[in-house]
Length: 601
Image 1 (cartoon, rainbow, N blue to C red):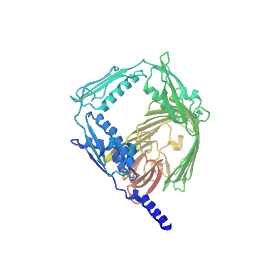
Image 2 (image 1 turned 45 degrees about the vertical axis):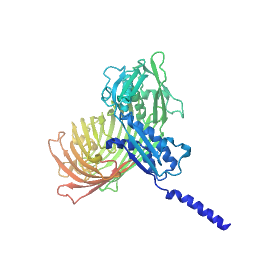
Image 3 (image 1 turned 90 degrees about the horizontal axis):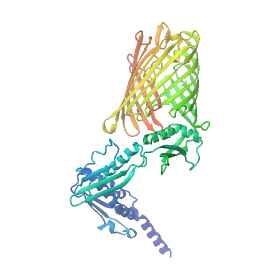
Image 4 (image 1 turned 135 degrees about the horizontal axis):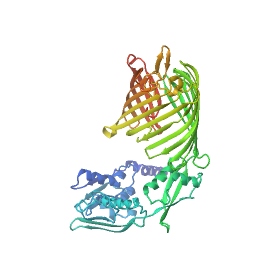
């Protein structure tokens, strides 16, 4: 009895180990007289090829893949214009299509796939009609051209899209004649479209499916800005969805057209939104060898009063353990309300309190203001506001208290493919801030600052990226003692010239008296090379100029720095490490280290 049990145990063990020693399935794939590129398309479409490569695939899996491959491979043939091809798939020598699924072999040793594409067909008729004026169908969709099946579908979709763009939201295929004549190897493709009536946008309905949104329906409609009464346009519909997503209040937005138009020629739209988390917190850190550690954090409320209003509180402590002055403090509050006056215009209110202990000055300030932001397009946005500012300054010029009324305005053109790790595109931001002094010590004038960046990738798989940056600034009107210290320009540090000490370049207006300049120019260049998917090496060079006069024509100086760095890519952005040294007398003697999240620019 004991020996019998032992025999059963050994048998069970052998059966359990059989899959580990199962014979691998050999797969052959032949495409007679087909070019290599065509063969690769067929191989890529084959489910057998991918299934056989999986170690855990069973015989049942392989048979199912083989039987599915008939349709997949025919799809490739039709897409390329071959309608008389012959496909043979043999499993252990038997045609896969003739094997009953419930009688699959227990083991599959060999699968042979053969595809004879046959003769290429050409279009005898290639027509999609009627079409709106100036509609351009795919170039290859014409009589006498190769009759690729994918062109028929593309031409049909192009025709329907053209009618929809003209306001005919319910355009559809009314009839179609697609006939392959094997005797002469031609394809007739005659597609009749029914454009339907020209429609106008109706009302925007709010779906009640799932959890209802905490944002009021009236505010959802205001933010979306669906142009009710205007002729239907897919672009306007997508723009309404984009506005809702851009508000930040929603995790997902889906727009659905009504099945049938209304008797008055309008088409209602239903939106289904899913709220994002109402509250969010975040934190960041940067480390520089001279400036020390900078810690920042924020708290965000996405829907303060049910109208997708956003409240954000930011805090920062900088200069911890640094050697560039003392510690800096910053606390800011900003309130944003989307869709104020127009769907693309937002209202903002903000207040900031700061204490900056820099190498050449100490300043405490309070600023309160507000304004309007506007989205002109996907790439272009701007802000215009008014603010009151109080500054308490101590520097080489002495101690003074200034009060100003500011009128800040900015325009941003952003065509980068990724703000945190751009590899192509252009970024340009211009800020103009006229200011009026509110007491005798405070002067009148204007500050302008421009920041431009350009990115270009090249090489195999876009392995290399050239990144360039130019910064230009000027202050006209007031003298340096009538302007808040942090509105003046300095150079040196992570944001201007790496390798040079933080804000080490100012203007020496007298022996022992150094202040910020009224003119600034900075230029940076980087060559970034991807080592692998996670690591990137960087070489950089920066230079900066600070001038005493607004146009930089008077007293001024340049300084430069260069170095190397590395980036480690993470889901939240690249972690940045740069090591820079001054260019000049201290080349290779002094070094600055910078650590942060995101590219330097």
